[in-house]
Image 1: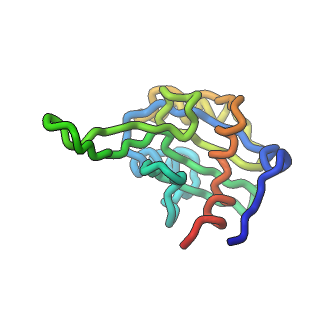
Image 2: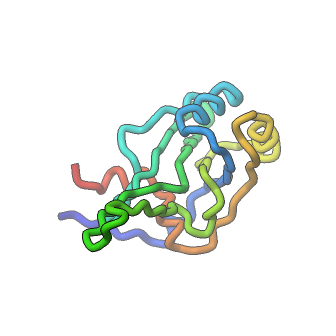
Length: 160
C-alpha cells in the first residue's frame, strides 16, 4: 500500500478558519450560508472519519474557479454509539468526539483556502444569519489538529 508522509510544508497552507456556534442542522446552515454569500456549498460524497474512531464529520464544499478559493463547512462534533456488554441498565453509550479538540464548544468550522476574502466583512455577514449564534476567527495551535484539517489529502488516500 502506498503511504504518503506529510511534511511541515503540507501544513503551511494558506487558509483561514472560522469557528461557528449554531444549533442548526448542517444542511440548513449550508443553505443559509449559500443564500447569504452567494456560493454553492454542496455535501461531499464522503465524510471525514479517522482510523479507530466511529465518528463521522459531515463535510460541505464550495470551489470557486474565479477566485481560486475552496470553502469547507464541517461539523466539529460527532456522536457515536458504543455497545457495552457488561452493563444491564444501558446497552449503548453515546460518546462525542471532536475534529479540533481545542474547540470543544464550537459546532461548525468554515475553512477558507486561498482567495482574497475580507475576513471582517465575511464575519459580519455570517453573524447576521438567524441560525448562527456567533462566529469568529479560530486559531489552531496543536499540530495534530492541523492534520485533521487536510480534507483533500484524506479523500485521496483512504481505501475505497
